Image (cartoon, rainbow, N blue to C red):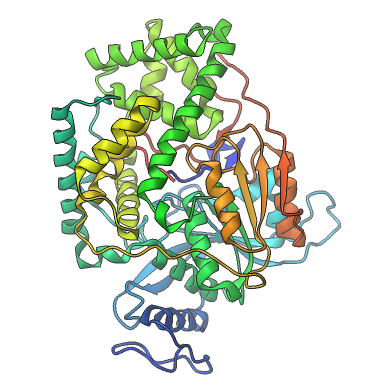
Length: 551
């Protein structure tokens, strides 16, 4: 499941402790309340008390590219294993831009600070370090006036005790094939690769591998809250970030101030993660149809066909040609599919993806090579993100360990949803052979009055986190409200082009106001066709090319 990108027109910015302390744990902080429960609950209280006392020593960002002077960096220490809070510690990288106090609509008005807004972009494996930069964008200036914007690299990501499962130099295996109905020999090849990858994760990451999971991500979030000096948490999670945000709401409901769930994952325990990925593959087929319909409506621009079927034929023709002769020696069918998968996440990419396909079929492969070729300069980042994605999803729950189950389910699904089904299966297959112990998914659920009102945002045709997930999230979080962008499918809609959605977001974060139980917004405008190579909008950070993470 891929991290949701923050929308903007500025893609260039990418820019409580403890009465009973387990053996080996640190002593309770002075004045901290007694906490009882599981070892992990007690360990979280110990770690949070330590973090509250230590705070975060923010300073200049020496390792964040193109960071403006207003952005500060620091670290917070968390236990690798919360059952042993006095054991090995890891450091999470944290970034911050302080509240501006400036009303963008009234320069004479000073805005009251409301605390820190912590953000996670999803993944698993997404890096939120660059989030504070959104305060420079018009859609975020009101929120930035009232909140310190805080991003961070979750455990395993970037410099936060980075995980690795293979040599980054070997991560991009391009060009590659992407059969929608794979042969038996191809399946055996991918089984061997999945086994090797799982073994590589264990070998390169050691005995601590099992500690990279969603429950610990939620515990880390509470330690970060304490380190920031926040008595209660204001949090926005996108995509996978909504899942461990919901875990946090279930585990620490009295610590919640406000929470936004942008593009919600289905948190039902039986869905984590095998079933969610099957549902995702089915949803991508519908979104792929949306994209082809758009291309067909603009046949005068792209010449790829006037119907969904003829556009599919053009795509299949390109895939077949790339199988025979990869573009630039590095773009084959798998690279083509990964590039067009990103268009399933973000309709911002529709114009330039369509233009690249059109140009390729007319004899110019350069735009396709540029958009679909592996970004080898980002291999280390991509390999790290993929390792974290795999570790968290594999650690979080039980997966089928017999490939016959995978084969049966994905063969059936591929008959009606061929676009993404097998690629998604291969992405997750290491979980069938995972060497670490698994967690049992927490039953996400809060009762009336346990949790303040929370806000769920969802696009009705989102493929990465299908809409049923938002409905299930609302059923499980008592008092939550759901805002739906109708007839739209962009993944991650907070702060995007839809002013109606942003109005609900601002009202909630700035005033604590929510609509009635559900509200809806008309869809944002479709992208305009372009014969050039630039879309009219671009996300803050384009997905890594070559091997897609999902969430």
